[in-house]
Image 1 (cartoon, rainbow, N blue to C red):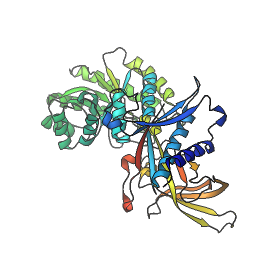
Image 2 (cartoon, rainbow, N blue to C red):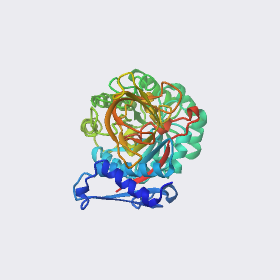
Image 3 (cartoon, rainbow, N blue to C red):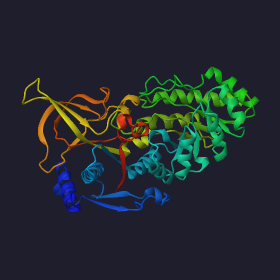
Image 4 (cartoon, rainbow, N blue to C red):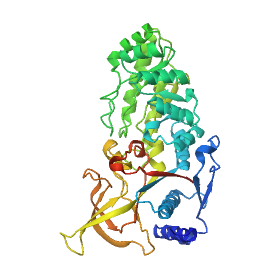
Length: 456
């Protein structure tokens, strides 16, 4: 085991190799500290914030700190990996990035209250941080409801946004006071009326999600032609319908999908008035927002379209507007460092230029399940050497596999990467959304261990 002094030297060495500008140390300095609370999360229970490592990066005013924060997180992961000599993977969740995303949401969607989709990253510290940041919660089960409540959310800050609910979960929602819940069929209405007649139900309508990465309309959403029947049935059952919801699909690339869905929602609001129901007071515009602005569409581009449509179709303040972003918050909050646990050289090309197969401590049965279930392709990782000799700068054709005994457990099939040794690190950015949330222990391999940081 290396001494603390040696580890500190190693972390500094890694930071320089990663491109931190040593000439700029007068204006940028990253310091690491630990405490029971990072100090800038009022309202977060201290028990939930214990063990958060503060990464304080001081910069000249107005400088974009993103690169410094990323390097500080990378150093933190490498230092921890070396200290623990762990053979698998470590993830760092940045609570400050969650806060920054909450601020970004408020700036882009001033009329829309976010209800974080817990399924995206149901980590207790993530939930506690979002509670303190004024974010509410979209839950799909009693377990997610309990997680939100345990994080400090009140029942009014939760919507049970699953159109198909277990009867026991409806009963649990009644017992804990979570009244808002969605439906898209008459059988669900009858189920709710029997178990929780005081619920406040929200009609989910179908959308055109053909331009999204993960489509949902094949499974959920009532057709506009069915809405009159469903609202009349709710009236017969004496259920209180309070609004309309929709979801344009996860990873939507076309903001006009929101416009079409908003127009249909407006129609349903008007149908309710024609049927003699009380005026609706809730509009849920669902999810589908990007986790970063590096893809085909940015948050601002969506916001410009959505805000204009909201002002046109739902003017005034008589309707509460909410949303269900998951990826928007979780995607950029997590960084994953996986060590090379094995290597195989295929010398059918030449001895000097072989194809190299690397096996790392996490894979598609773990955090990289996002590649199968979320259609996500991780960007090429940063390479960090485990020893002070540095990286071999030869670039070789490479395949990268996870640690299980399944050939499906493939992360990259043919990419150019520097030559690595066993024990070196691959560091992956933007690994928060739909990663550890659905990881397993297939082959008995441990799930990724999570550590918490706060970049300031």
